[in-house]
Length: 185
Image (tube, rainbow, N blue to C red; front, side):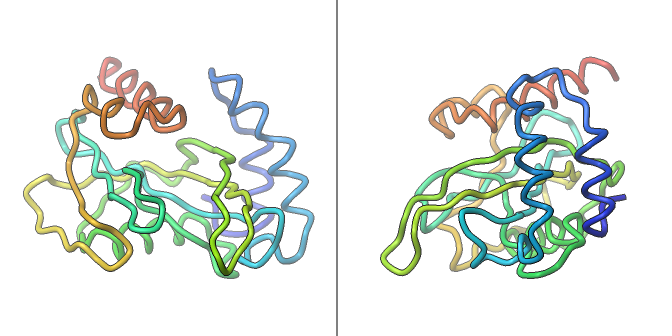
């Protein structure tokens, strides 16, 4: 369970991945977690965020949002805004950004970690998101609600993700993990 700074430090320290880039993220994550304000969006050069990788009951579709500010298809997620329970952050963002209310989770373990650059805006400089991702389950026939944070929401087949995401490496990494899990079942 990742519900405090200390539990996140322990989870990141113990985190295992077959993807070299994820292993390389461990040290910067742990360094960031030494900063008292790392869970606040004004902490620069980067801060902790939480994301939801929402897969359908068949294991073949992922729910993505067409992010309004970034103009890209991404998993729901957002700023911790001081909340050190990064799992709760990911769940809250999933519910707020999709309108889903019956999201399930197979466990509270970290599904993926990523560090990515957010471009500068007129009111804020370029910075890094230290993103902790969790896997959630939802049914594809549940009603979705597009909010002001996105242009659209869509269930996208795993094999179509490269086209929608412009081959975003972190999304394709999560896709590979989903496919590996589906083949194990």
